[in-house]
Figure 1 (cartoon, protein in one colour):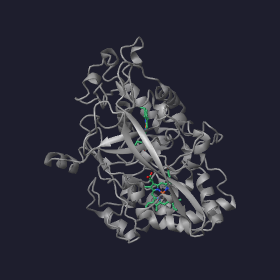
Figure 2 (cartoon, helix red, strand yellow):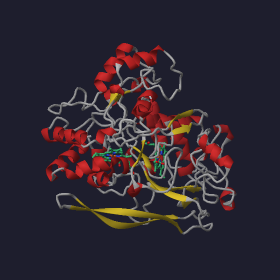
Figure 3 (cartoon, rainbow, N blue to C red):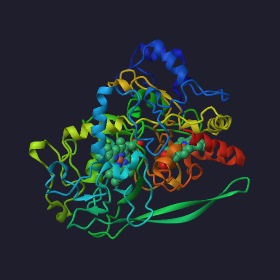
Figure 4 (tube, protein in one colour):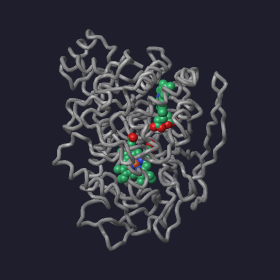
Length: 505
Ligand code: HEC
Ligand code: HEC
């Protein structure tokens, strides 16, 4: 893990003197900063070595955007504290569209129709409940906030090339498309259902104590159009929380490049890699969103969600049939909800941009109890166990970011936003762009301690298999094997302190 603060000033001077080409992946210094700013930024983002007191601004983990409202059920639904008052209306309109329930076409409420024909949920909010994370199904009718992505690798020279050129991240199942939709509009039966089987795997700590982990196996059942393709893989994804996403988008590319160490040149066993994807405007960019970092921009993730999750077309993804494939002729034959007079797409431009704006401005909560002695102890153990090698504590967002409330903020997301091999335990066999089936993007940890309060339930990791923060840590393997071992080697008391630190985020 190469850290930006380790770059010496002479190297900085060299890189600045010259050959830096925009978009050049070898450049690893912040080009949005003046020399004076760069020195300040490096100093405030250097990981601390002093755990006797809180760091300056630490409790305000999203800078001036941090919410200082009560940490209650609505804790993830507050607007960025520093959003200009004249923009709050856009946030509120975006919120109502995020919650809007789409209906099947044709309908008398023409501005809301176009749902499906196949879909997983009728609104963004159905999955991102209270803007918090989702969970694996608790009962048969409860699979909404989690679904199976379907994909296969390339099987021709042309497909290999498209993948190499980052034009696609993988290829859909020939019949079922990119994800299994377990719901459909009236008169059409759903594609199938997600079935999960859990098996208990005990984890024994060096001190003899034991935790039972649950290892899931996923399958697609009740399939309407026959079997999945021979080489189709399934990958389960649970809904992440919506907070702080605009700030993540505003982190400078150069910072993420500086985090990357694909060949593990510093020999710490950790080799974060950048996900590279083509955005909806056709530009090659660093992926940051989703469990595989497969989307570069919140807008792109939004358009994909409208299309794949709800079956609503947008100017960015104009097919009104959503994820129906040519083989699903009964789906293709259904009416759609496009209204020429309202603009292109079942959700026209204004809708997509308002929902995107909403998703960019949900405030992470302020830290709770960040200065308590046990929490500071836990923080020290988090650093000493090597968690910060991937869960990088802090950044200062780009000075050139167009949106003023997100620009030049000191933020503490605890992520490098890179892909890491997390071992066989967490692997599925699905590759997504640069990410193999074993690689996952480090998720941000801010707000994670409020999961239970916001969502009532508490499940972690990409498929919600972990029922506690401790289980999530114990699933870490691959590049994180040493960090997990360091955690397991702690005394029970110290493990509790580290968890208490996570709960204070
Ligand atoms: C069927 C459930 C579902 C619906 C409906 C849904 N999402 Fe999501 N959302 C997810 C899942 C699952 C992920 C993680 C995707 C992945 O890793 O592949 C996600 C990820 C995201 C992310 C990226 C978050 C991050 O931390 O990287 C954003 C932004 C987002 N969704 C916005 C939306 C918006 C806006 C809508 C409505 C248009 C929406 N979602 C509808 C399930 C859903
Ligand atoms: C090699 C990089 C790496 C290291 C080191 C690492 N993590 Fe992680 N962490 C990840 C990745 C990647 C995931 C997501 C894995 C998944 O969802 O399958 C993750 C997930 C988590 C989660 C669950 C987050 C969520 O949103 O569900 C927690 C909690 C967590 N890590 C804590 C820790 C702690 C504590 C340590 C140190 C003992 C640690 N991690 C060390 C990369 C790392």
